[in-house]
Length: 470
Ligand SMILES: Cc1cc2nc3c(=O)[nH]c(=O)nc-3n(C[C@H](O)[C@H](O)[C@H](O)COP(=O)(O)OP(=O)(O)OC[C@H]3O[C@@H](n4cnc5c(N)ncnc54)[C@H](O)[C@@H]3O)c2cc1C
Image 1 (cartoon, rainbow, N blue to C red):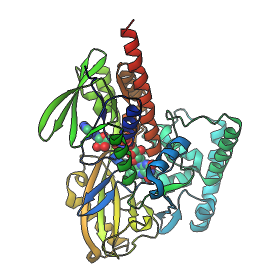
Image 2 (image 1 turned 45 degrees about the horizontal axis):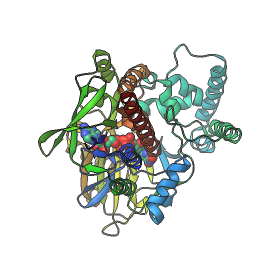
Image 3 (image 1 turned 30 degrees about the vertical axis):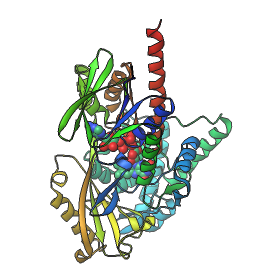
């Protein structure tokens, strides 16, 4: 009798890596993906003949094995990359992460003096007194002082995320916001010292705090080329891939998943499986079980939230439109915009470039539901900012990421634990990736999560066979 496949749900970085590893272990694998292309958030979308990315991705990793693997897959197509970031604020452009000299030179003297006093006060206070309830606001005040916190972060976070920093768990600020470079320098020195005196363990994914370390990489076609190579390798190793196949339900028999219901070309199909690796948003996947995983899991699935992003891609008649590869704005509809000309991609025709503006929102917002609202908001802001003339816009496309960012709201840890425990309690299920573990991580960590999930599932299934043979 042939073994039912392990079904890997989602062909983003985590799913692609899981599929490759499971094939290396000799497991039959079916990789299913709702979209017509692989890569998930790191994939490329072809619109009007141009390839856009969900905010062009750069590859970087602290994990030597993952870097070696990607280098082998990509050969000479992996290209070193230097990115530049600028934030426009109070009429000035600041480098990011914030650098002390930049802040000192560009803010008014009274604000600088006020900020320095506030920084010293909060730094000392933070070392002596613990706040009654730590949240991202209390942490950012400690990192930056109240004056810089209010200037740079309070309103910006409220705009981008839709809720104030005080509603975020401290993990949000800890993981997402770099510290002033002097403090960051001390952290890095301490981490380097720890590395020298430790055994140099492989990267751990649980509780991983994203850091941009080491060389950045891209390819001549962007990150999507890395995803395509991973998919080609999975197929070469014998995995099967079904695109445009949406997971509808996970058929549970007691403590295991026996089959996955897919929707493909308007038809539903139930595919038996020996196990699953989930990389879909953990709360969505938790709701897909039939029979359900119970009321506590349903409540936990409701309690965690993802922020969505609408991307407006513009093809413009200019060789380069922005002064840095990534630019952040506070006053505009979009909080970040990127110019693909800075990535050295081939542009057709020459003399044009592609811009990608990111508008954070919720799916109930009109900017999410109405493409013309999104395009008009972005173009009007670019004209106002003097970056473009309307006449230079050749075409505009809108694409969306419903699960762009996990929101680390206060107390999310409890709900997440309920979900992770429910998945861990199933004998042939693993969950992995940025969505699947609700962790704000980059591609290299999602890849590692996929590998680890494949290893754990393989061991679980092996154990199951051993027990049933006793
Ligand atoms: C704007 C932005 C910029 C980023 N920039 C960088 C960067 O520069 N460098 C970096 O390393 N990381 C970056 N990241 C993070 C990176 O994108 C993610 O860590 C990584 O892509 C996550 O991979 P994943 O496989 O875990 O999830 P995903 O990529 O989300 O994969 C999940 C897959 O599941 C599929 N799916 C969903 N529902 C279903 C269903 N019902 N049925 C079937 N399939 C389904 C999705 O289509 C998707 O392909 C960025 C993220 C964002 C949002």
